[in-house]
Image (cartoon, rainbow, N blue to C red):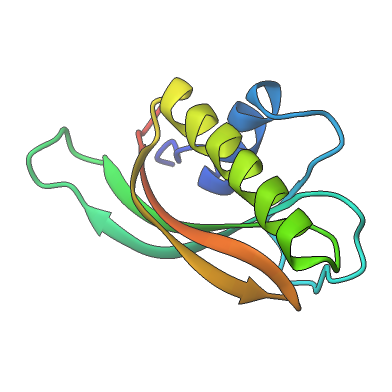
Length: 124
C-alpha cells in the first residue's frame, strides 16, 4: 500500500501554533465562532493539484485562512485585527507558507481577512 502524505490541515495548524499568540483559536472546521472572545483562524482546503514538475506524489494544495477578531466597537476591532493580521502573516512567512493576498471580509458576524495560501504535500 502506498504511503500517504500527512493531512495538510493538521500539518499547517500544528506548524503555525508555535508562531501565534497563545489563546488564539486555530481550527479546520466550519462551525460558527461569532461569540468566541478571542482571535480565530479558520483553515479550509480549497483545491488540490498534481505538481507535474516535482517528484511523483507531490501535491500543491490551496487553502483559505480566515482570521477574525472579536469585539463590537469598530475602531477597536479594526486596530486589533490589523495587528493580528500582521502577526499571522509573519507566522506564515516564518513557516515558509506561500500566500498571495489578504482581503477584508465579514465572517461569522466578525470583521476579518481571507488569505489564500498554498502548501506542498510531499509523499513520505
